[in-house]
Length: 254
View 1 (tube, rainbow, N blue to C red):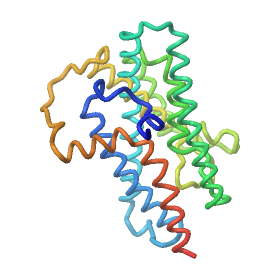
View 2: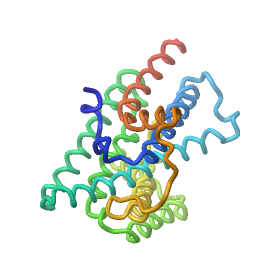
View 3: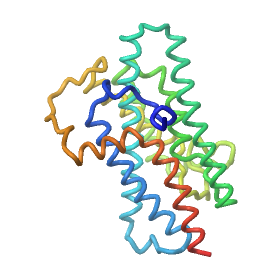
View 4: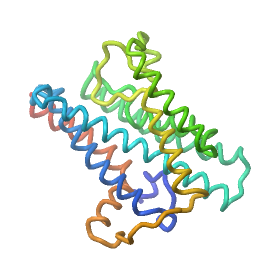
């Protein structure tokens, strides 16, 4: 029941274990990262004393997690086209529904954070980003190098324009909002670039939805099975872990 409710990917027989494995490892790392961030938010731990390691750890974790969204989108798109031969309007509707579904879960996270964090609520976190990215990425799923160039352009624009900050709350979804902090905040610039580069890699390594490289058959190893299980249920894990962490730390911090 939970798999059907929360899953946004293909059936098990159509999945590649290495992608679920990486997603499972990434969701564990994200839970750890969010836990450390929450400790800092509730003044239980001085994150600055960690010499920036956890900042880099959290960013790397988010990049991998969002990058895999792009890879998975290419597989889903290729298989939808080849298996169903659906009209483009039908395929668009599929990704529109999927994006809105995940964005809707993001809104639930926003509501939960409003209950517990009040003025520091999560307005545009990873689920909001993924939901919007799925919709925005749809016209680009058939291309390869265009995604690489566009992703690189977004990173370059963000890197070389350090004064490129948004001053309007209404545009916080687009680029970093000046003087704004949240325990989960990933605006489109630069984070959408990770999705675009994931699409490029997906179309390169899984052309037409088919893996075009050799990989050892490790999927039956116990650790691999565990992490692939987590990867297949990453949305559910993400949805439940942050409210649990925030509630527990709020109680502990008084």
